[in-house]
Image (cartoon, rainbow, N blue to C red; front, top):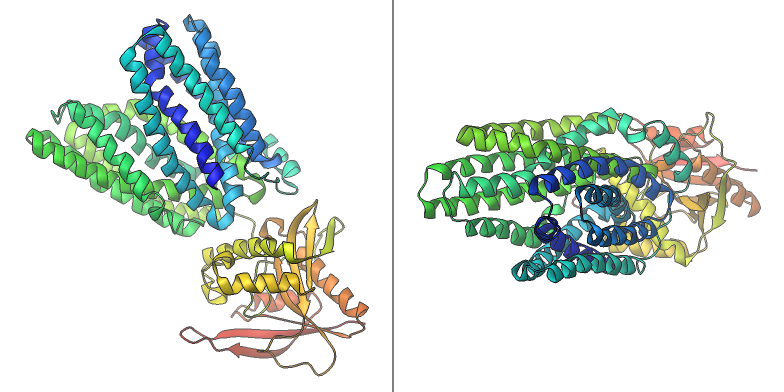
Length: 591
């Protein structure tokens, strides 16, 4: 993660250089008119959005680290090509490919963050990198000020070369990040979904993404509308604009990570998005009030309003990331991040004109209308997210092993093809793999409100679970199911646990059964249980037992009964300070 942060820092220093100096280089040094530059960048930006989904989908099939590094090298060449611009036509020839690479690379970056952070850490990683990006952009903007102060042809050339250098440095740092393998089966399924429309035909995902995109126009408000309002309607001197933006930058660096928690899965992320909309709405009357105040009080209220706005901004960022990640199929995270970026980009493009007209044309009333819009949009987020979650394919059962980490498993029966599932023995090096599967299962269970089954703490953050996974991996009873080389499930067999009735004959006991919900319907759980039966036969024992959570609907009990087990002994595990844990032992004769 540290190397990825350094790569982000290098990249965003270049971003700051170009944001601050690019337009002036094109107008003052190259000689293009401001209107031409503005129109060219708008056209290039809109065309560039078309690369988001295809390149995001590519990150689902290839290593996103290598792909992002390659794209940044291409961006370095595109940035260097600005040195050749001497006309509007040449400007468009350079700007359009550069915009395509930039928009596509944002989707690839999101896929890389998801791969590095994992299901339980990707939103935290996203927030960390955002704080780093703010530092880098600020540093780049300050460095650009040197070139702008010198204001010579050579100074502008140095600015362009500096931007090129940051792309190359970032690419080199990215290659030090461990390779991130594509999801097994992702190449075929992601390619097929893109050909059929993929995320662009997932209406419920797009509805949630659209909600986030509307609230995401807060960036346009802060960087375009607020500066114009500050100098115009509020009557503050221009340097106050810098102070306003500095408040946002400082608070983002200080609070981005702290305010990112609780958005790892769709339901809590949607509630956070609702909260973000309400907080952003609460800041609009403060901005509106500055038009009728003397300069000094107006400046104070502007800074307070911006502080409130930044909290809403940060809540929106983590909530939007959590929703875009969790609502995406695990094999198509990159393509779905591309679609999310496409919707956000369109909202930003439309928002520049509409928000300027609404607020600067409507005055205080315009601010209040904007606040009402943000509040209303935020309030719709939880319902839209619930619809999106309900539309996703979900496993038909859940976990196994009382008191053990558990994960969704697939219902036995039906037309599942288990021939491409291979099973290999596990070892001590596979403990992180088990924790990864358990973390994903925890997130899935928490999202569905089943915290009574396994709590809310990820296995990778629980010292007891970490020790347990290491013990499983080192005891010789771990077996891993793979599809196309990717681990999609884990089985642990050994002796019965202390909280179930002891066996009356030699037996083999299933201590853990956990599968990846991305492979629901593939028969992974049933295949692992069949392997457990084979192990029992090889050891010359005739009894295979397992225990599971005994929910009121008996979903897990029914799953095991479908796999040939018979319910035998119900039991209850007392847990001090918490509700008792109801379990069920099941047995299967093997011979």
